[in-house]
Image (spheres, rainbow, N blue to C red):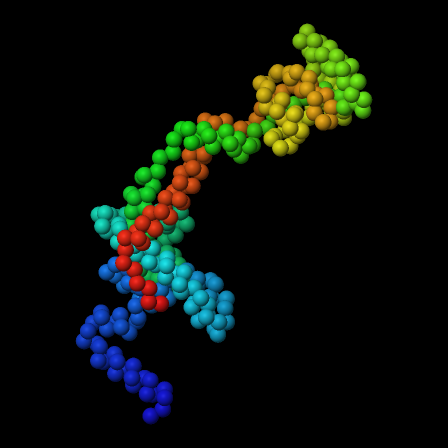
Length: 320
């Protein structure tokens, strides 16, 4: 008897001997790769997860390299399956469940979002190697996992007003991209520091003229010593990080229509007027966005801790 036929004969004999043992025989033929408390994860489950999640990657590989690629992914996917199994067990322990109506509702939402009919959904699933019942089972698992994570992790996260305020103060530049339109009267820094006093006196006189009601833009055209004078000192809109720090600090301290006191920068002496403000959410406007940022950051940390706690309490054997 040739080697090929001996192999076929031995497999057939093995199946025949263990056929009477039902599910246990199936597990033996398959192979257990992990035990999670009182449940097993089989080699076929592991391979199925890899084949589904890495379908696009595997299809691009030559046939001779696919098996090595799958073996290289097995351990990471096994750890993921163990984590999922632990979370499913925790969901059952805490009394979480999923109704047929919930699954049907999710499917209806998916069909509506992507403009799909029952038939187009069926064809899409078949292309992924699934039928509708398998898809419903997988959706049920995802809904159940979401419920237990919400119940045990997300509902325990509280973001305080102080945390929101502190985050805003530390990250003001990230919110809203507030811009301020300014006009400027400018004198370049003199080479001789002795001339600074004379420039400061000149700037003081300009401030007095503005206070008496003279038009800022006309004074800029008349007196400013930079290119913006031809536009009445108009520098357009600036935002944090787009201009000299001293100019930004002055601009962002003014209300619309106000004029700054004369101030020095490394470039020279400035007087600016704030014409307009656009954008910028402010602390209250950014509140929801900040709360979500802080919530997701807290969730990422607490989720890792929660999963580690499930592992610590579990009996796990890896047989891969």
